[in-house]
Image (cartoon, rainbow, N blue to C red):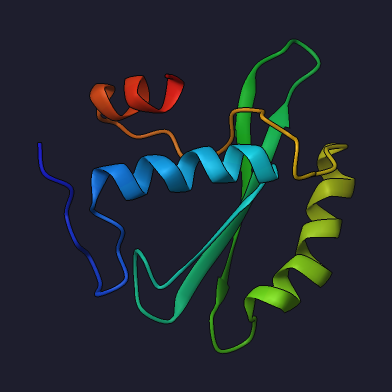
Length: 110
């Protein structure tokens, strides 16, 4: 199934998308800008419940109000404090980007 390009910035190249997901897992968070709708973005980090259920805590923003450095400096610490998760370069937890396409999930797990 082809991935739909919603904006000029939507990532639809499967190898690049898989790399982006792996990179996000290693970082412990992900920031996307203008990929679903121009002028909007989102930042997400893992959220694990006391019972071990895995979710993503995601906050959307307007790209006119927040730049990537501002998100990392201001929003990410607040999200981290909320979840108790401190993103780090060596963090390999599974995070927000789970595709509805089974094949993509399998590629990411390799």
